[in-house]
Image 1 (cartoon, rainbow, N blue to C red):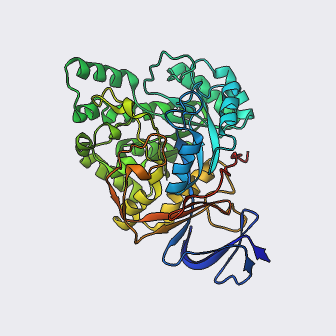
Image 2 (cartoon, rainbow, N blue to C red):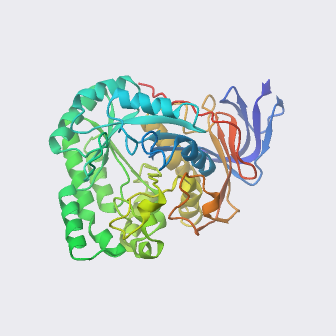
Image 3 (cartoon, one colour):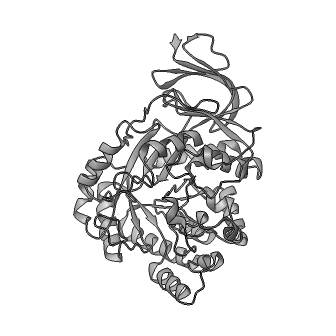
Amino acid sequence: MTYDLIIKNGNVVFRDGVRQVDIGVKNEKISCIAEEITDETKEVIDASGQYVMPGMVDTHVHISEPGRTEWEGFETGSKAMAAGGTTSYVEMPLNALPATINKEALDLKLDAALDQNYVDYGFYGGLVPENLDKLEELADAGVLAFKCFLSDITSDIPGDFTNVDDYTMYKGMQKIAELGGILCIHAENPSVTSKLTAEMIREGRTSAAEYVDSRPIFTEVDAVQRAVLFAKETGCKLHLVHISTSEAVQVILRARSEGLDVTLESCPHYFAMTAEQVAEIGSEAKCQPPIRKAKDQAKLWDELLNGNIDWITSDHSPCTEDLKQGNIFEAWGGISGVQNNVDLMFDLAVKQRGLAIEKFVDLIAFNPAKRFNLPYKGEIAIYKDADIILLDPNQSYVVKREELYYKNKHSAYVGRKINCRITKTIVRGNVVFDLQKGIVGEPIGKLLSAVK
């Protein structure tokens, strides 16, 4: 056999451990795994001294095209993902305009994404008060899951996303359960957070510490409890996004122990930064839920290391730099982080805290691919897509603005030293990023299709 690509001499990370083997790729698939492959090949990659892992499957990315393409487009966003070790992603139904709440809006996004992505991609459909009758058409059109906000979203722009009320969440869950889908939820109690925010602004209390206090832990826990209650009532499969507290994790674990089909994710920024550091970093570190205090972050680390968090996502939520100006209450709430997902978390979790590397690949690849019914993604195994990344555990680098691929080159991680590095990203057997060459070739990303 003649292979398209052979990766040799690497420390290949499987779900049951690490072995030094060769990987043969043919027709975009992993077709051979052996101690040594001696067949002919069109290309050889020597991975000596590096970990060879499945690429990240990031199920929480905001690309703002169409409508707010100046914030982030498919081309720039997917380049950043490729450079950061992401090989597949699922794009949120906001912040593009119009929001992805019906087939017409989804078609606009599909057209905008075509031939612009360097990695494979799929889409969410949104759940909002006005689209209960549009959920089935979105499911039929191929969205991989649905997303709603329990937190407050205020916008007077036509076509923008809005949060759900309890009736919409209940009826939406009923319909999504009927469709066999998953509802992903941003969980914060909006009546408390909005009034605390207004109170603090009125009193001139607009420091970074006070922003964290305006969105206290119990507001996340309360919203998670309500979502769980509604899911128990409707039988809807549930996924809680960007969970920031141990207390919320424990609510979800209890619901799972009672038979609820529920999963949860968290994000690198909740592990990499503390609320005490946000004042120095500035509004680049503003997000919702907020970065938590060190004592609360320590408990979240315990949850991760104990296997209680199902997977990690970026929640990459970029914007133009002017929207990050002013005090932290006024600034846009979102962190540009997709380019530093994998190596940052590998450094923090594997190198610094001893997380088993096979558990790490579950967190970034296998678990999200399984939950979103993407059977050819998330694992290095025969017949899987050859979505592979190389990570050098012995390289260090400092995040620099000029090296970011984002349309707007700002990030809370600028100036941070990361003690490992992605050196290659391969999507279906095609090298799309090389540390020495940068982005390689033309966009080859394909639309993801879930297996029902």
